[in-house]
Image 1 (tube, one colour):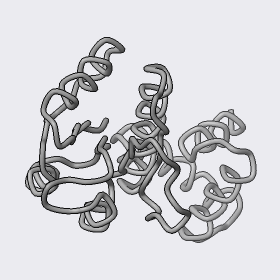
Image 2 (cartoon, helix red, strand yellow):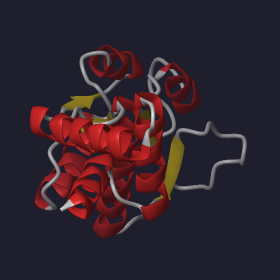
Image 3 (cartoon, rainbow, N blue to C red):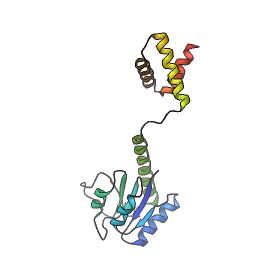
Image 4 (cartoon, rainbow, N blue to C red):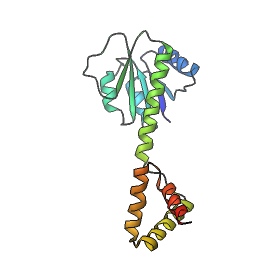
Length: 179
């Protein structure tokens, strides 16, 4: 689904946050003490969340957020609210925080990332049986309604969109109407 990186200047703080996440069933992929360590780790991962504080020895959280790949979000833990000028991939949690606030936010962000990645992956590949059913429905429409192949395909596609079903189900309905 997504990876979690905990990045805090003090190793003890990173371990405490990791333990909070672990107690709620969330595993961390890495514990880092510098932003450069985070950047080195994210390139080995597909997507995820970076939980961090405002400053690292080598850069500010806003710089880190700019350098992160598209499918990473920063969860900023801070005591004072951050001005509205923060980057779009930054979510703030004000300290002190409840463990449930942190874990709930991380779970929500991971599920959003999962949906975005799933949407980017494109439509599912149809099985051979599904393709045969669509072909049979097209053939039936072509014979009975004197449609061309593109017209029959478009008809099945449009009916499936109008009815809110997938094309395979629509093809099955068309074939059932024949009987």
